[in-house]
Image (cartoon, rainbow, N blue to C red; front, side):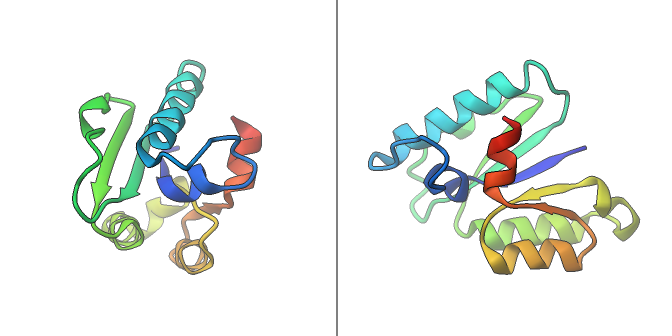
Length: 123
């Protein structure tokens, strides 16, 4: 089941244990955690970060199973991604975010939304 993650939501979640004072270091820490998670899981992950100036030089870290996106607006990117999936296949997409509007957008679109704390408990 593909996983679509709101990156900054995961980094800044109180249960993450990630120091988010240095944004790039926090993002890299999350990427390392997800790479380790994928050693035992086959689910492809798309990790989306807000980046107005494209300062995150992390798309180069993308792999076949972990696609990293620096978007101008992560929420808009995630919503478009959901909308591009045929409605009958959306239930197979997990959308990870604690942003209420994004969570309910995914739920209304018939995707499978997850709060960050729920996903942190799985990894």
